[in-house]
Image 1 (cartoon, rainbow, N blue to C red):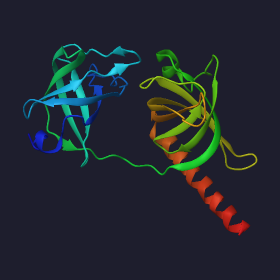
Image 2: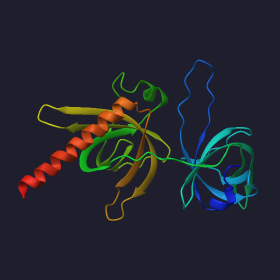
Image 3: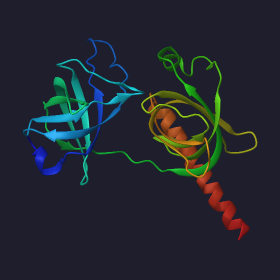
Image 4: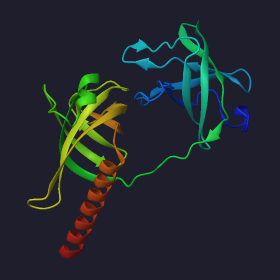
Length: 242
């Protein structure tokens, strides 16, 4: 392999994994979901044992031979690699999977986005696969949970609400950015819940970190442009007040 895994990866390192779907010829690749795991042990330079990821209260058990995309969140840098499942097993009451690395371990280049701090009203709900596919084409129905965005970027957002969503779930994020009295841009986006934590000093409030999914480049560029404009106006207003 191009990089020796034992030189950079250690047991306990967090891992983000997704199933590598190979689409039939002439069709687009399926949408992928990211799951959280961790390194349990390194057997050889090509074989690694990982904790089975959880989806809600259940284990995700991929069949033997399933192709995976792995991102090892090592202390030095994130490393990415392709792998396939060799077996799933139980040890000391916990479940693990042995994977074989089938590609070169390489540093992952992560795209960073400007993050805009704010206090912005939003609504959310869990999306079904059908709703996710039709998002933007027809209105989202059902009860919408009110929340407040704490910061937002072209890659995702952080928000607080009284409802606790499951990590890994796909949710609807609806909010508006007001650039002027009659210049309001409405965003209705799908996001994957990456992390949830209960706010210690505020009972029954939960902070969620969300990564946008299925977001086309034109919408992302428009969102980033709006955020920069809002930041510019905030700075101009603060300067005027002084």
